[in-house]
Image (cartoon, rainbow, N blue to C red; front, side, top):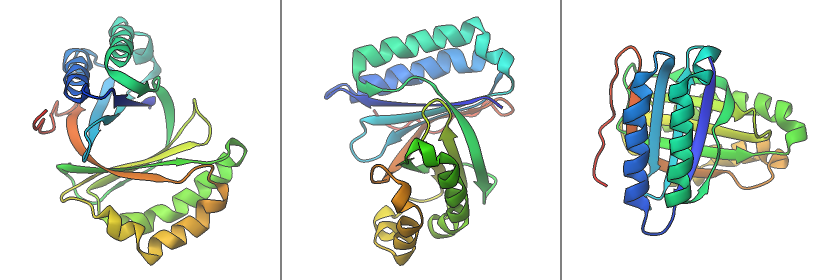
Length: 215
């Protein structure tokens, strides 16, 4: 199924405005399209300035709809007004999905990994080999692992959790050192891990929303 990842970092003082505008786009457009299977949006927990969005379509026909073109145009306008950094909608290939509990959690976690594009295939294989251990340590309710097709060398880990994830404990653990040793030689930048708050969650079957919390 066609899937897309997008990121935004708010201008200073625009954090609440960016959140509200992104949420409005999701509320206005996502549920209009019968092609959308799932839509997620998260905000970085501590500073609240960075956002990650993921949308999954049931088929390629959904990519050419008027609703999607309007949504993309609106997201571009929101980014121009409120973000100091943003990406286009990056098409991604899912490398794995791991569900440990059949419900979404109120907390989130993300990891962004960048390797040399020439070694993307090798890196993807090594990353797949580490995920079971990562799931065991962080115990998410769900974890997605993917690669950006439109930006070779960019990989991500995105997950939900029933409780706040202790990233410091993981980053100081022997398991993290093993993971660094396994993939570190292929990385072009340090892996970025951060805690997330779910802002929006929609599935076509249930049409459910994550708790929106405060601005």
